[in-house]
Image (cartoon, rainbow, N blue to C red; front, side):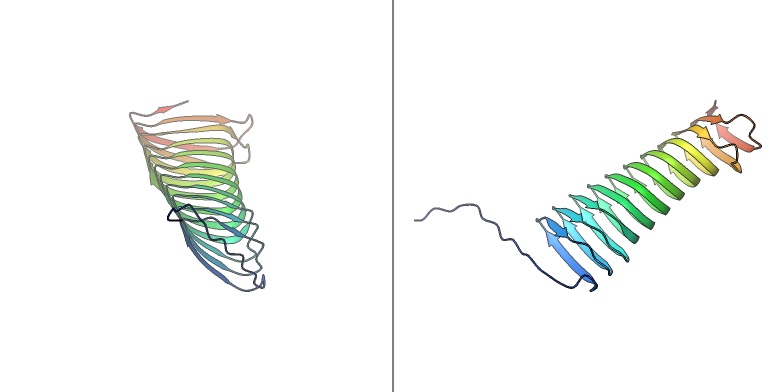
Length: 212
């Protein structure tokens, strides 16, 4: 007949898990089983699921969702998307208008804009961004330069150096073993809860800022 209908084409590709992977997919979903090699992946207008990458992951994600079980080191560019990264060693991320859920990582370096980060455990966070929201369960060291950004940190273990404008930072629990907190704020509110018996150094500088 002369009618037309929807159709889709699915590809199932097998390869040795110790070979490097280069994958590009636009307007489609991708599933990648465990890899013992490096992976370079570009996904636009689609979803990605990965069971794990033993080596390094280079990911570009736009207008989609991605779930990654683990990777060694990651280099990620993400826009208008949602990302769940369960575990990695070090991560470098450039993100815009996205939501990221990171369960555990050693060092995280990110440039952000209009993002939401939900982080479990991180050793060191370095962030430069604006119009963002961060929630962190446990962090050893945080270094930031931000505008219009809020941080909610449940536990700080070692140190914080934060330069902030038009935002806020809340530390629910600061370890008695921490080294220093150095915060500089313009139109910024800080709330810092220190453990009893802490031997600490806290430097606060600000214009139109509040500290509790």
